[in-house]
Image 1 (tube, rainbow, N blue to C red):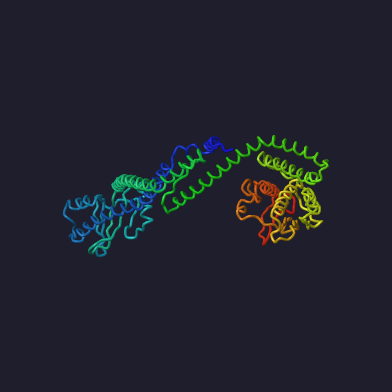
Image 2: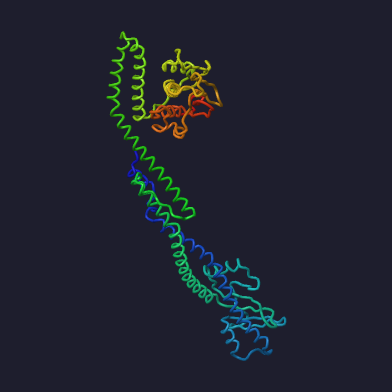
Length: 485
């Protein structure tokens, strides 16, 4: 029996507690923020490298102006105080330019130029080196001045400057802080926009699906709980339509199962009394055999047999609804003998209007439970006998029931063949379902349902084989023991 409460408790135990605290929307927002931040981090490194390059280019550009001054300066140098003003305007300790093969130098310190910790040549600086050097400035700043070389204008060959790295690092940190603020703002806006879009397009419909499933779980037989699909043409629309079809099918099946359960309960309550009444009628009918009336003596065996079939039918009905079939006790069984025994029980071995032919080879043996296979044969053969007795042969000839058998692709196959009217088309769709697959008027379809269940327990198959006339049921069992277990 279905126990929703117990299943929900089991699921709640198996799920990680951290995941149950966050809904799908919160997880989506968190993942969006993480991915946008990752993108910002990947953008940051080229940005900080480009900022450092531009900062140094600005200093080189200012130094180029100083180089032009040096180029036009007289041989005895610039006027007193002009050099310091040039250096302070550039923000450098020293400026050097090569003009006409001669190297001109401006320096705040006395000669020689100050020592430097690293040299940077902007003329041949690639992006990977620029990123690496920018990270080095932030992580491990130089304690001594650095030397920067750049292109020159005018008659100078190149310009180089010696500057302190502290102002550069301070400018890079300020740029990083501003970039961080802008990144956070962009991240928040992008995450919010993406969250709103996905929440309306995906999360909202998924929540609707989940809510409907939970409501349907509480009342699966209520048709009002079946979801109403939207007109969406995407995957969510397809999921809604598939869920609606599934819920409709499941609701119908549950209603049918409930009806059958109630019917089975009613049958089990009346079965005992009905069986006792039929047994008493059978005992009283036995006394009719000794009567002097010839007509009564002729019909008494048929009446006793009919009562016996009614008792068997009550027992079969109760057995089907009471419990599942037992596991088959497999052993090698000669099939020809088993078929003959069932034919004798059904009264087919004597002379009569119906001819019975047992064409199962005498050497044919199959691993099976003889009692259960006997029940399968009895149900199938009785159906054929009833069809032939009520309607006769389809072509007007003598009614014939034939059982054949033989090996077939690793299986042992039995065929129950009759030349009767065949199985009605309306009964074929639910042929092996209880109370839905009856092939005889007034029947309830238990015989074929029980036969199909017993054959499946053996690991075999049962089917109605297409034929031009009559009905042919095929039972295929595994040729080796244990195939069905």
